[in-house]
Image (tube, rainbow, N blue to C red; front, side, top):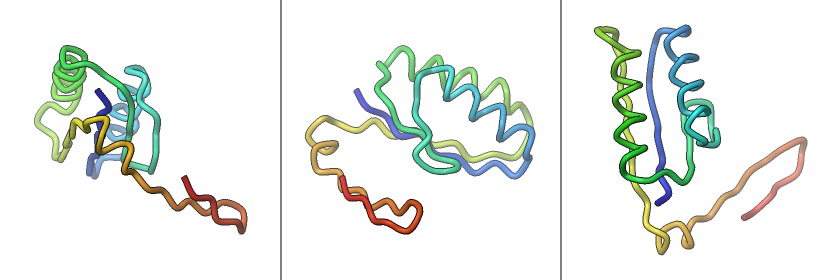
Length: 88
């Protein structure tokens, strides 16, 4: 199942570590603090536990949203790069 993970973490170093964990789990960065990718239930739980341990007592807001295939097919993207507009 596809999952969207977003976070708001004030500490720069901690934010970079959480981003690295997301990348290690095969998620793709879609915005600065947002990752998207296919990950099963067990791996989602493992990912969240790893992030929770990394955060420890520091301030953070991490949210993970499982997204069904039907909803992913309805996804619309407008992305602007180097002066052009791309639509998916």
